[in-house]
Amino acid sequence: MDLDAGKAVVDFGDGSMSPPIDWNMQVGDTTIWMAPTVGQQVCVVSPEGDDERAYIDASFPSSQFAPLFLGAAVAIRFRDGALIKYDPESQVLDFALPGSAIITAAAGVTLAADVAVQGDLTCTGTIKADVDVVGAGKSLKGHKHTQVQSGSAVSGPPQ
Image (tube, rainbow, N blue to C red; front, side, top):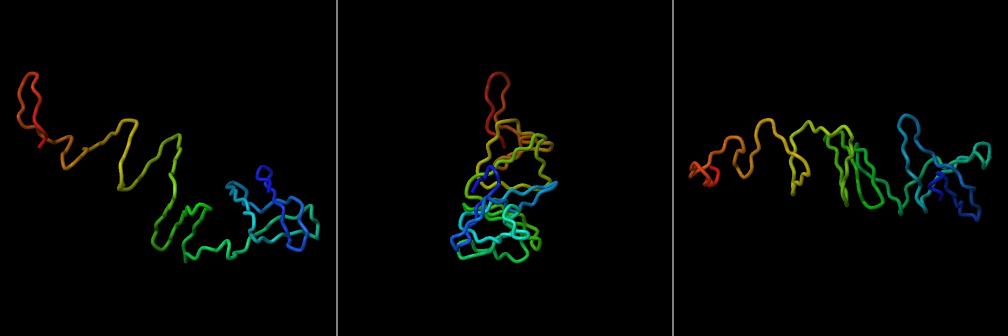
């Protein structure tokens, strides 16, 4: 397989091999790059028997490359087990990743939703809040301190 050229050689199983041929890619305003996998069963289309115009059109499920059975959901499963799935019935977009995720957006990211974080949150910049910040039940904006004295004394803990 030549990933740089987008070509693969197909072994027809009878001792014959195709020349390096293209695989069918969705191209246009949106292009999807998805190279075939070595050992994957494929359909080769060869218009009028011309090997120079041949291309890999589709693949077939096998015991080695089983299909996903997810009902109405649409999903992409990757070699390492990562799964990106959207279920229109439950209206849930699910990213199940064995590693990490990075979002790079030069103009920023806006989340228009309540957000729950399970785990630690680290920020290398400023955290801003239009209304208030509450930590351990204490309002940053509205809490009061006990044992306040003028001068250089330190106040007591927030209430």
